[in-house]
Length: 86
Picture 1 (tube, helix red, strand yellow):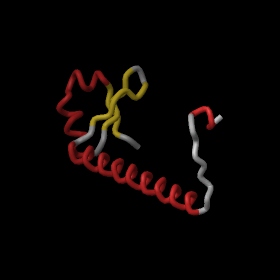
Picture 2 (tube, rainbow, N blue to C red; picture 1 turned 180 degrees about the vertical axis):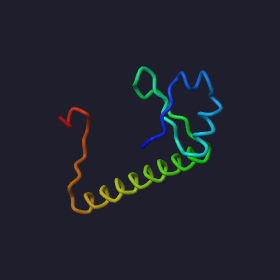
Picture 3 (cartoon, helix red, strand yellow; picture 1 turned 60 degrees about the horizontal axis):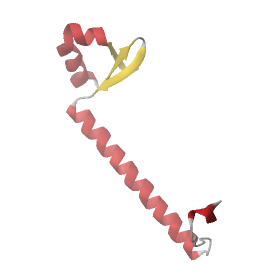
Picture 4 (spheres, rainbow, N blue to C red; picture 1 turned 120 degrees about the vertical axis):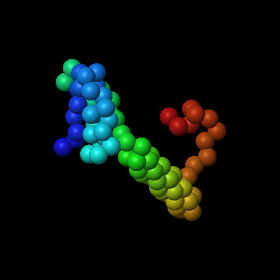
């Protein structure tokens, strides 16, 4: 269950909300009963950012692997223009 606070909580006592994010993890800020923003501690942000970066690298390496396999198998075709795609 995510930590939740409202925009009113931020207005009334932002320090408590910030401390909550530092101690308990990301805090979802709700506006009109809908998620609006998320507050992260620097540590949580770094962990999220590195995870995203690692995922992107993994996806890129997988795309290269598939390209090499399809090239080896002769499945690739050279296109002269975008019209050849359709």
